[in-house]
Amino acid sequence: MAKIQKVAELAGVSTATVSRALAGKPSVSPTTRARVEKAAKELGYVVSASASSLASGRTRNIGVVTPLLDTWFYMKVLSGAQHALLDAGYDLTLYHLDANLGMDLPAQANPRRRRLFEEFLRRKRVDALIAVSLELDAAELDSMRGLGKPVVCVGGPLPGVPTLSIDDHAIARLATDHLLSLGHRHIAHIAGDPDFELDFHLPATRRAGYEEALAESGVEADPLLVRSADFTIAGGYDATLQLLGDPRVHPTAIFAASDEMAIGAILAARDLGKEVPGDLSVVGIDGHDLADFFALTTVDQFPEVQGRRAVERVLHELDGDSSEPANEELPYELVVRKSTAAPRAPREG
Image (cartoon, rainbow, N blue to C red; front, top):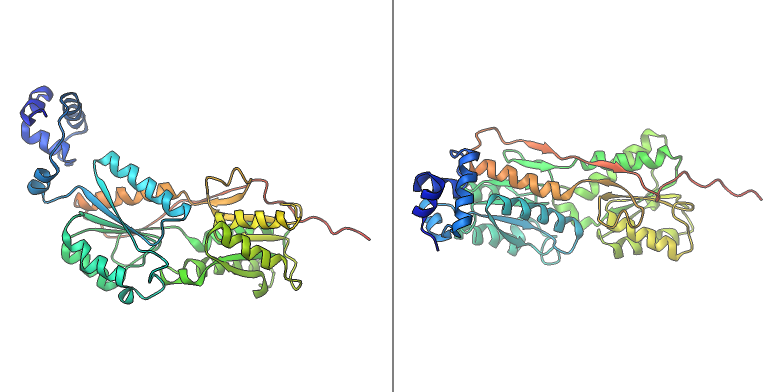
């Protein structure tokens, strides 16, 4: 392996500048950094992780903690974060708090979550933490502050912490208003499972947006038109079978709280012999990769962008960003496809 001195000679800088450039220090100009990186690449020089850590006190490793791994949304957020970290020369350590193993418990009663903050993060293997869809409590935030490690949360605002969030209330209103604008009045809602209420109350917030949109259009919310599912295709499928099989209600449209549940709703409707959107319009939330295949109207919340923005934010924190912690509202966009249309006129006779 080439010595750092040879990299310095080829780039025409000092060895100290090489160290700062390859460590990503902001004191090095972009032009100089590019010259150093080019020289290092030509000579096959790679910074020793252990030596860099000893010199800087940094591991160049960011921890990401998430409650789920088996849904498309979380994998997309992780993908965006991973790509951004690779581009910045950082590694990623993933901490998975299985939603089926204690995630329905309060934070301090959850053994895995407690060990993460009381034990794993104290091993100093990460420089900072990105928490996705986890509403960190005061004790958890104090633990990270005591270690001198920045925290960025994705999913909702938290006082005193840099956060990034989607306005779930506004997203739900947008999806419901779209159906109302087409003339639908019997609009069902497939909501998230109540187990997800612990962190940032996403299911309740999206249901509130749905009900508010109905109320402002003079439509009375019917509890029988609301069914819960677990944010999966199977969950949406089962919920829709129960909804469409209930003789007390006759929905002409469904707003699902995730695209996977919306896809499940489309499949269930088709299995029951209903046309989408002729007999039933369906809209979801996410911007799923399969949304175009199923011609699904959705509110795209750009999850990969969420992951990238979280990394940008945490790297700013590591660089000593002195601005006050604030919440950044993330973008979203209604994408209309063929799964929604005006309700079919009743047949005469």
